[in-house]
Image (cartoon, rainbow, N blue to C red; front, side, top):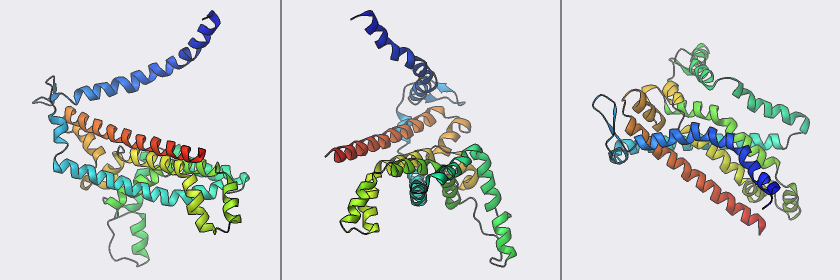
Length: 288
């Protein structure tokens, strides 16, 4: 092997080395730290004792914790469905809009990112609380006699999650719809298919990678956003994200919190594996 070829082979390594070091320090090392703590024991005063145990993972299968996990998965699923139902028509409209306004419409999706999500959550609290703007106007116009409890409910949590993660659904959907080969739609129309049939038989299957990507980008973060259930759900709503946070900050049971975090990460990898499998399947169908 010549000297030039060696330099060419080392080139990509030198390019990737800062990224590898960065990910190792900020991702790999903390993750290994969390995995290790998950197999240790909690001390009497909240300290971590170096005693190997599997009890932390066994405790997760307690019916109380399983019910909380299932509740979290259900709220994440509802949030994902709402974002998909509202995001697909919006992304479809943007992808088929004239190019001169397409950038403006995309900017309307990106603008919320310019404001901290915590501030936007407090804005929703101002709107939904019993003395908030919505209840005040409803009572002023005589539509209700007493304030409605919008806040501190599952509906409020779902609303906050859907509002925060809506752009994560629209952007991959837009990319998938915008890259759709319009010749398939023209062929379906020439063969006598009506717009509704064309949409379900052609558009939806061909944009499935964007649908799955958007669902994953919404579903997974909902399992980790603890501040929205804390603020908009109050003490009535306990999701897996709030539970993990409380184990570290309140209960001082780091081993159990670490074990719950690893279970959540494992669930995330399973969902990503399903996405990759479906994506590869769609690619194989396109080749055929």
